[in-house]
Image (cartoon, rainbow, N blue to C red; front, side, top):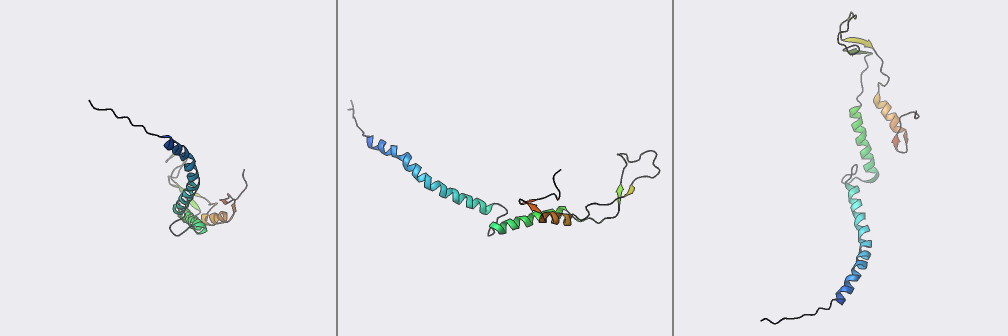
Length: 139
């Protein structure tokens, strides 16, 4: 038969050291986490539009505003006014009874906002709390 061996391990010192770990980790975390968070936020800001490589701060803000203006100018194309408009149907009917003329119908019209670029630029100059205004008071 094999002889049994008994071993006795003293873990009191190990338990004392383990009891100190939370306090040591808390002290370390209190200094490391703010440093790491600061670095993370700087990195995120550096890569978040309108910022780009080499452009940050006020220059990045201006770059973003110019980008928005370019996009809006693509949407708001100026229109040449003709003083009339062609209507392909009247009241939803393409050939209503009782009307002597056949479609398309030409009706006189005036455009109230013929130059959208001028209107946009005027409103862009009038800002309130950094936001573009409608140009009139709230109803």
